[in-house]
Figure 1 (cartoon, rainbow, N blue to C red):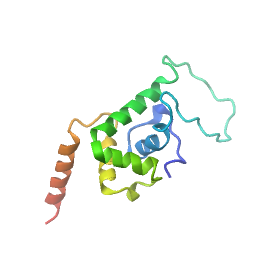
Figure 2: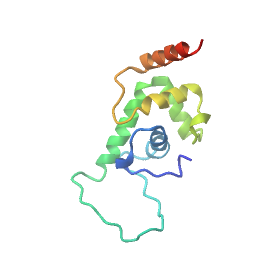
Figure 3: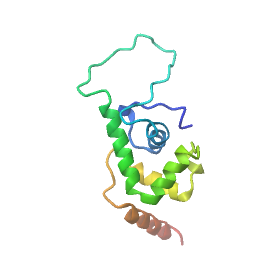
Figure 4: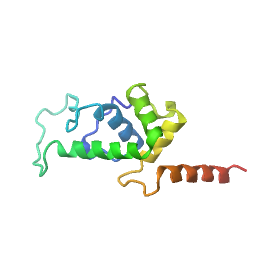
Length: 133
């Protein structure tokens, strides 16, 4: 399930699971905040590392990147946002086709796709038609 997982900002790789989790848990929060890590009952004396950036900077970057990718998908991105945040969809195959396409477009890895969302959808449609006899 999406909400049982936990990702630190540095662990976000912009895959389907990561993006769904960010949309469900990080975007509804106030900007600059990241959900606290759940207590796992493990080693209590965790090692701390010194960071060169402000504590809120990484969360703001992830939030901005996902928001921008959602904006690029226009109405399908709005549908995806609604289904995950308000509809309570936590499982990828349950999403409607428009939201699923937006999620696949957004989940492109570290780099954004250079192709527009409309061209990407047209290419996918063309590739599916080649496969079918």
